[in-house]
Image (cartoon, rainbow, N blue to C red; front, side):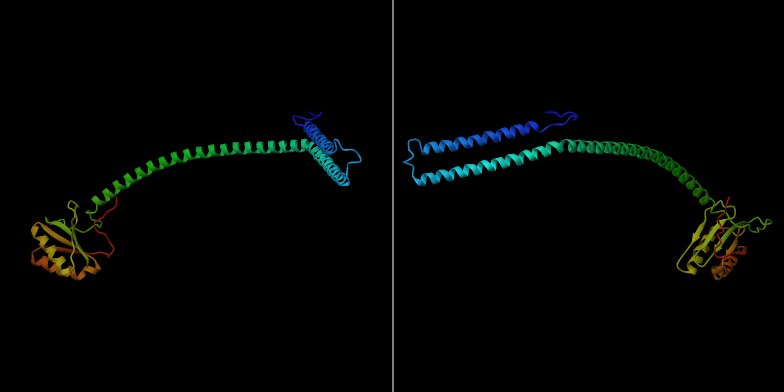
Amino acid sequence: MRRRGARNTSSLFAFQDVMASLIGIMFFVVILMALDIVNENTPTASAESVDGQTIVKLQAKLKELIELRNRLEQEIEATTEKINVASSSSDEQLMESIQAMNRELQYLHAKAKQTETGLADIESKNKSVKKQIAATLVEIKGLDDEIGKLKARAKAKRALPRVAYIIDNNTQREPWLVEITKKSIRVASKDGKSAITTFAADTAAEMRSQFLAWTKSKNSQKHYFVLLIKPSGIAQANQITKELKNKGFQTGKDLLPETWEPFFTND
C-alpha cells in the first residue's frame, strides 16, 4: 500500500499482513496437532480407564502447548512492533538517504566537470609550451651557427698581429714576428698570410734548434725577424739573437707582457 503524501516510497504494511497471517496459521496448526494427540491417546478409553500417569502426561503436553502459544504471541507482538517502527521511520530515513546521495552525486558531477576543465587548460598550456620550446630550439640552432661562424673568423685571424709594430719601411726585407717564451717559440708573418708555426720541446735548447732549422728556408737578404720577447723567454731570446746574427739576419726586439697574445686581433 502507498501512504498518502508519500512520494515514490514503498510500504511494509503488506509484509505485516503476510507475517501476521502466517503466524496465526502456525498457531492453529499447533492447536490442531495437540488435539490430534489427545484424541489418539483417548479414543476408546472411558473416564474410569484413564490412569493417573496418562493424565499427568496430557497435562504436561498441554502446558508445553500453552507455553508455545505464549512464545508465538510474544514473537508476533515483537515482530509487529519492529515492523511498525520500521514502517513509520523507514520512509523518512529513506528519503533523507536518497536526498543525501543525490547531493553527493551532484557534488561529484561538479567535481568531475571541474577536473575536466582543469585538464583541458593544462593540455592547452602544454601545447603552448611545446611551441615555445620548438621556437627556442630553432633560435638556439641559429645562435650555434652564428657562434660557429664567429669562431671560424677568429681562428682565421689568429695569424694577424695584435700589436702595431714599428717596421722599417726603408728596407726591402720581409718581416717575420717571433714570439719567445719559456715554453714555446711561435712564428707568423707580419701580414698574416701564413699560418702560425709553433716550436715546442722539453728543453729550451731543443726549441731553439727547431726554430733555427726552420730559418734555413729563409734568406737573410729577403727576410728579417722581429723578436717579441716575454719575461719568461728573455734568456732564450738572447741566444736566438746571437744565432740569427751569426746567420746574417737582421733582428728587432719588442717586449710584451707574459699574458699578451700578439697574433690575435679583434674586428
